[in-house]
Image 1 (tube, helix red, strand yellow):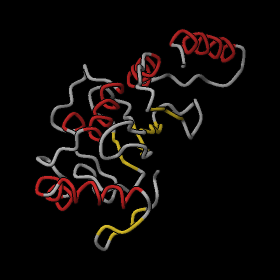
Image 2: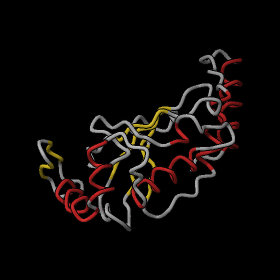
Image 3: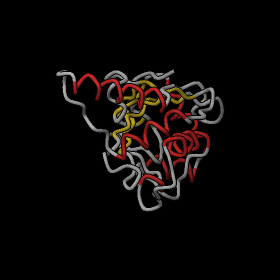
Length: 184
């Protein structure tokens, strides 16, 4: 992972080069510094991974893959995009699910219903907490606070049918009128 000391060292080098006629140094926001710290201290479960599709220079936008090893979503792979604001941690990261999934807490557009991304966000929370929260949505879907009301009703009223629908969606198929690409 990226060490905070390496970042500081790189900034010092850039500052020295700038004084010698090199390019100007971009000052990092408090949000970027906090995010560096969060990423360097990540302690992810083995079924989760993080990647930086725009390269290591753009830490404010990254992806997290979650592959649950338990529950309804066992062996599926679900990718989430994170967009982190420069005022982080005073504002929660924006998280979207790139993988179309039949889930009571994730709608078909990828919006995620997780309390710590909304009303329960506090600056003491971090990226690790958010990833564990997302992971928990797959091990314990919550029908009481849904974004996909149809999936929540099936989970609440008929868990066996819910399990069948999840498997059908994850293997690439239709649930009702909606097609889900394979994610196993």
